[in-house]
Length: 307
Image 1 (cartoon, helix red, strand yellow):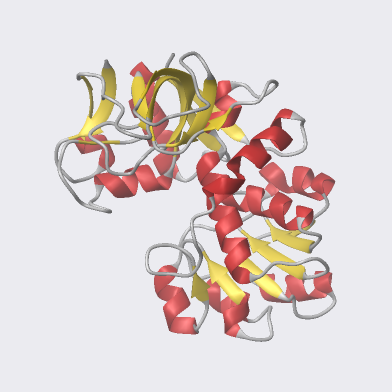
Image 2: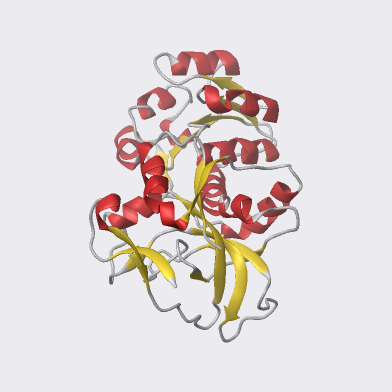
């Protein structure tokens, strides 16, 4: 099979290579998937840099949609040929950016949701849901989502609204109107954001969820709430520690919430939830896909189409 992976740590564009390898064999409780689409994320590039270091080579592509082509011992309720999607393990010698991938966790891909749309879901939905859950988002709360133009932030706005919260979102022009149509109040990034947010909310917000890339936003976000621990970031861990905010990630708060992926896939199939896809690329064009993802200007999920 063809697979995109690295044999040494370093800059992604320097260490990744598309090469041939033996297809992985599913172990107990695993399925092997003939991959049709694979989402790319900042976590993939962090793996290349040494995140969760381990034996090499390692694969990238942590979001997978495809059809089951082999099952491991103990797997029930899933057959060869079933359309599925899910998060790929972080530590495999290959991952989702391959013609075959192993999954420890998977869900049926509902009718009406294509492979690209399914591959866009796992990381954004799980990260957003985990953070909002740890933050305590609830019916009737006013929630700020900073970085609502990111895939995680875009998902977080919709998830918070489904929880019955009022949402104030910061976003650029690309997604602002769609976020307003979903039910959020939207303002821009940059200087004065704390004042704009509190003006929209009519005072301090109850909770603030930060999905934006690492920047100097945390001090501003802390000014939008009554206490620093009412802010949670999924990106700027160092600033969270400095300012007394919460963070969700390695060593932080929250538990993995892959259990909700099936629910949100069904909502996506019904047109009631979405993670925006910026562009798709064939596997042979992985370098262009990686460059777009690494640029920070994709304005949506970058997806490899493989099968």
